[in-house]
Image (cartoon, rainbow, N blue to C red; front, top):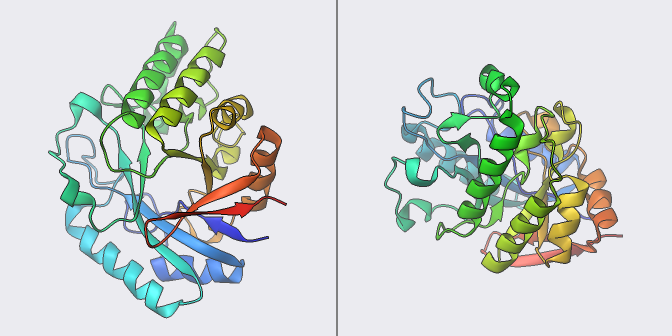
Length: 270
């Protein structure tokens, strides 16, 4: 079966490793037919003071050049130029305009910040331990997520939809109504989500999104793609076939794939 990965990073962000070329080589060796590079779109120093979370703005041309060079060197692999953009809502200090996204065919939109707090940063996880924190954080996360998916940002797919579960902190209440809210918002926006295999390697020990949330997306008719969120070349194909099976169990019969021309195509899950 055809294997694709629509989410990977490289050395250009502060927490990634490896050259773009190394990812392309690893993808070909693993039999992938399509690979999207989705490096973290620059944040300002107010959000990324250590230049660890995103690509420094001055390095973005180098990243784009490296992707183009990999595309030329690997004509049998469909290489897609993309980025991962942090949704910051009213806290965003970047003054983004549509032209900022012209170089990118595939734009992942992610919620990593809840009111300026990087809730998935291991160095800042203590806030989760406060009384009532999981309840408060999950509600606010979903509110921001729905704002993001309903925004006019020119993005392709919402990445790791339930990232709030990363450290396995869950609220005491039933998440189903929030899951339904997320699915309805995404369906109304006509956007995709992804199954992100990296979640299996965090404390939550489960791909993003949870099976229950993925089923809600499927019921709502939300297209779904797959990404490994690789930050090392050796993870470029990690668990892709498992992700397809995970989608099938949730009710999906096809994987949706953004293309290098900006269209979509599908792969039948066998």
